[in-house]
Image (cartoon, rainbow, N blue to C red; front, side):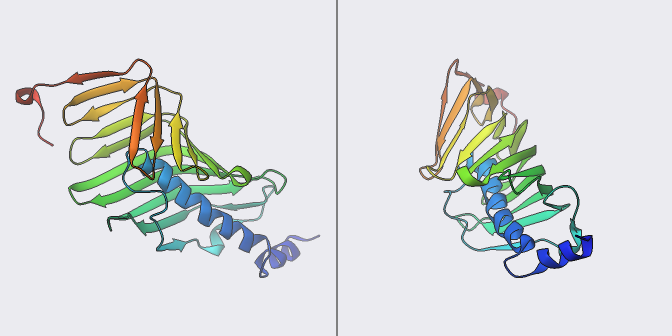
Length: 210
């Protein structure tokens, strides 16, 4: 079968291209939730309105099932704060493997008290399990003095949970913290640190201005 025939079939309604776009529309919002949900920015189910930008001419038919070089997800948090998620690449290696790999993730959100940015080198979306695993280092910074660094963060779309069993550390306006694990309930905006948790409080006179 020629490449031209494959390309025409992929473009048909209900074909490979349509299926790929539908799955990516799930994967990128999941990535947004995984990156920003760790700090409880918004509930998992809040992103209802969004625009999805994916240029068909950026999709390459190769040994992988389908691939795109760039993808952008735009939306708003429950509080109405706009955010943008960029993925430098997305690929499903084979229809037999229900996993979409995402590369070079960046999330920017304009919060009421200033901008925040979260970055991660990549992740994978497990379609049949509704699970996103964000590969670290995941780095978050906000304008008002919050930051977090973590690795291998797992987000379940079934129970709306966020978790990692890898060490995390970061800063808050009071000082710095570190822990061996993190669990979060994104719907309830709760994050729990456990295992060797340490908080170092910096006296107000020694704190840097946000």
